[in-house]
Image (cartoon, rainbow, N blue to C red; front, top):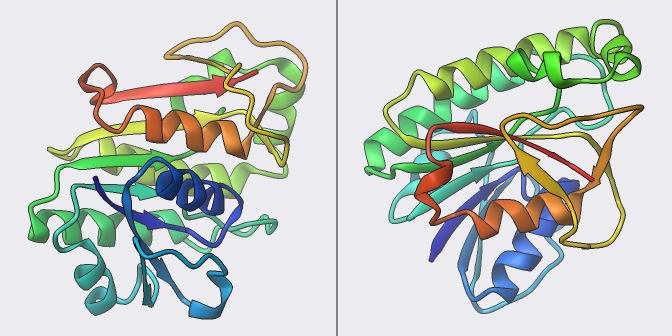
Length: 208
């Protein structure tokens, strides 16, 4: 399958690229800095640019069968409107290219999944992550209101742990303490559900 990975140089993005190639997909990465894509593979194409570069984004989206967005603000607590701007651009590029399948990495605690979150986690969501989460909610809602075959993935606290395939996934999960899930497992879920209609137009929580 032809996949475009946005945010491909981040933690989850690198896992998506590596696992996607291992699974036999043709992977395109849109990266602001081509040098940060260290993987070399005959089925990997790198286009330099960001989601705010409409020319590069449109070129990267053309001909794809699915778009996976793992864009995010990294370790900063300043949202800077990234998701609002980014999702606007992604939806526009996909509409122009006629690509219908979108999988978007969001986060546990954004929107309705706040109700599923343990008390300890909620404390972080409404304090340190307040701005980031407000921006993510805007992006999530824009995706939900689109006509695409979308899936929003909301992982618990991300770790750099190994691929286990032992995570839990569901629209609602019973969670306690500070739940987590590895970036490798998040990538596995996303790639495993690329062609799964039962996940279309659903928001899925992931946690161990």
